[in-house]
Image (tube, rainbow, N blue to C red):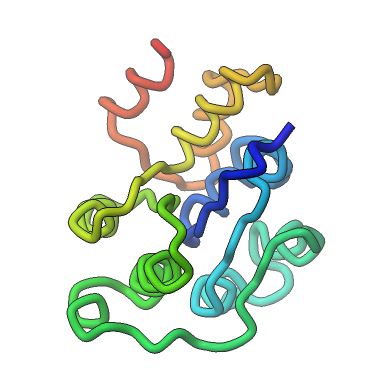
Length: 162
């Protein structure tokens, strides 16, 4: 059951990684009462066209709260990060949501400097597993790597030991 108090703003890479890991995005729906996808992130997901990996499942997830228009970005975010990461952080700050899901190191660091809590695809999977969601971390990591998702050995080791 989702934690009704938990909302998350999510970036492109975790959406693709979770799709690769589990074959769908249901893990997000199980954990969070609201999953916000900024316009810029939705645009990145859709950029490869309808046949690109993950696009069909993304479009089918009607429960995702996809922002209908671009976000006005603070200059320091716009000049530091790509538009997806910047819009995730800006959206969270603007809506008063304290949790973002970003996998890239610079985006995670910038989010923390903005006083936001950060998780990523592996963190989502580990949280889901701890709450009884059936997921094999070994299989999830293998499927992520098969789809070109890069994970550091430290992240893999952490995922497999928790």
